[in-house]
Amino acid sequence: MVVERASQALADVLVASNRGPVSYSVAGETTQAGGAGGGSLSAKRGGGGLVSGLSAIATEDSGGDAVWVCAALGDGDREAVRRSGGKLDRADTGGQSVRMLDIPAGTFADAYNGIANSVLWFVHHMLYQTPLEPSFGAEFEQQWASYERYNAAFADALADEAAEGATVLVQDYHLTLVPALLRERRPDLRIGHFSHTPWAPPDYYRMLPDAVAEQVLRGVLGADRAAFLTRRWARGFADCCVAVLGAAVAEDESTGELEVTCDGRTTRLGVHGLGADAEFLRERAGRDDVDERIAILREQIGSDRDGRPRRALVRVDRTELSKNIVRGLHAYGRLLADRPEWRERVVHLALAYPSRQDLAVYRDYMSEVSRVAEEINSTYGTESWTPVVLFLKDDFARSLAAYRLADVALVNPIRDGMNLVAKEVPVVSDDGCALVLSREAGAYAELGEDSLVVNPYDIADTARALHEALTMEHGRRAERTKRLAAAATALPPTRWFLDQLHALRDA
Ligand code: G6P
Image (tube, rainbow, N blue to C red; front, top):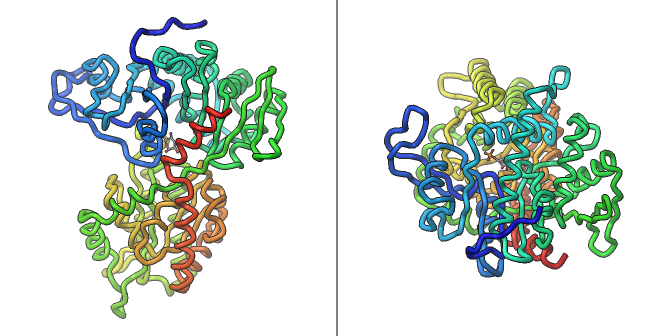
């Protein structure tokens, strides 16, 4: 199917992602049906490395007219689409051209909550409790059909917006089918796909129904370049292509890049390790609201019986199943049990912000985090010392404050595409911070050498690493932090984006 194009200004560079750079909420009342009524809309710009990286789309270096295609996530977004006709007001987007898609709410929920977050996310992060799940039946089939429609809506919009020969960068597991669908519609385009998650190894990946496992791989292989955060995830993808599709994999001797050939077409696999945005973080972390929060946190951390400030063990995460917050708490409990010398002398600041609360398993996980934190506090806490201080409300300034004052940062995911917290802490740390890092985080590839590396399932091993981190000599800690910060900022978000764009154009 080759699509007739609209006679509007067409874009030379396009980005597609589920979540866009801006989201809307409706002030005042919402209608009974959950609609937005006539209230005024307020726009909020998304934070984080992804938005800042993809925002390079609007810079001159990207070379041409650009558009970002994303989905309406909630009622506020849907209302903004209705009012604007789809292209958002540039005053809300920092001048960017953003086309937001009003995909029917039921289709969106199936695709986002049902497939992307409950199936593909679980597969790539290996989160299933396999005796009972996954179980692919009628509900899955219906949701999968929605995922196909949701991907097709993106492919249609991109086909409609792209100028002849334009470059399109499709993001993540929400949009795995888009590259192939778009190629059918517009064979003239250069198409890239980027996975921000890990990629599952074949034995785990093949839990998916065979036809779906194939469709996802063929969808991504519709791209000229499929890129990943680390070599390990690129390898996982290539291995799945071999196991499921019988594809051939070769390594380009000059660049070391892998190439997957299937049905006569070759897709190159790129590796682009997204780094921290040092300039932004340092500026933002130096503002007054962050200083204020440091003062409050220091008060909460307090001093030991000899009047020495207590050590701060910090973690900052979305309350995400893959982040392994519960085992992190158990490891801290184990430290206090095995090494009583740390009682009264350390406080664990656990910043665990809500995420994906539409899913029951995430709500349950959040309750379990609170329960275990309370258990530790009731077992070990004293009148003057609260061992764990848990924060469940998202506050970016507080996260930066915690980064700055941390003596030890705990980043222990079960599995993680990259983990930007591991990269951000050393960049803004005031006084050096020892990093306890899971070997299953993508960031391990770049930061492993200067971290205390743990097996995330091993509580005793994690407790041991926490002890080592807490006792690390100050000079050594500062030296390591410097090297970690250098590694963490090797590929800033803008460069990360432009590298992919240029590689795709040169392909
Ligand atoms: C993390 C992951 C990304 C993903 C994003 C979606 O940042 O690393 O791969 O796209 O979460 O989060 P959301 O809140 O939009 O579901």
